[in-house]
Image (cartoon, rainbow, N blue to C red):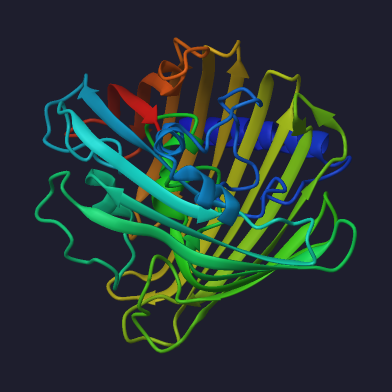
Length: 423
């Protein structure tokens, strides 16, 4: 309990300090002005601001064949990436690592995490009206873990990496109402605005996922999302959706999601110095049950101390009514990301986190969970036309719990790395 209190107090102090520094002027709309919502609003950056992908090598290849011009005229892009990784267990020899998702479902084994291909059209927010779309296809081990119920439920076999999924498939409409204001309407399947981490491996600062990113928040939603951009600094949205990771609803009642994003006018290194976002989703999530609600409150904040050093904090609290065998369930936690960009070749991130699952309905065993992860992002050849798209992310991670869930131990130590190639 003492260790739990110390972790909680340290995370709370860090979060309060960050929120105080962010309070002066809060968060830009999480599209960053490009019209397509792909990354949560307080995503810590582990790449330089002048990153030029997408589009990438795929569009360059189409240009050489003469097929790119009609696509450019229509505003359509094709791009993607591939990610493969390895996780090694230093503390015990169990077949799986408790409390880990996506990065380490199988231990001591190379795996294809994601082969992603995206087709999109980004709407032009300077026009009175414009439209866009996005379709993300995925092949690899992650596809089984992030797919939505009712969509490609059997697009693979067993626990291997040969699974397929459609991560996003949506259309957007843009209705401009003022110099900096307008309404964005998204219909279809899209990534959740909640949390810091996301499905897209290239948008995360580390290879392994946090407890919050794995167990506290949803991954995708299917429905209609209406977001109003009041200015470059303020936006808010309301969403009617099928629920948490449901393409086909498992009951007859919708879920409701709403939130806002704020940012400071002050810029530093191409970023708003301070960002803050708040989201809430509520609705019944149990199969054939329209009355017992699950509710999640999620907040994120980012502060850029310098043009190279940033801090991001995520806080989540959730409850669900009358779960079979558990009654009322609560889960909650805090995570802090500290990222430093040394240059266009090297950046480093330290993540520290506390997650509590009172009944074990999310992670599988009731208890308090902590982790500290340190990793680096290496892009060895940033000026090369092709090799600039290649990056490596080694990391070391220590997990701790008040329960003996890591084999027969309270602790678990792992090393891991992934390799990403963007095209």
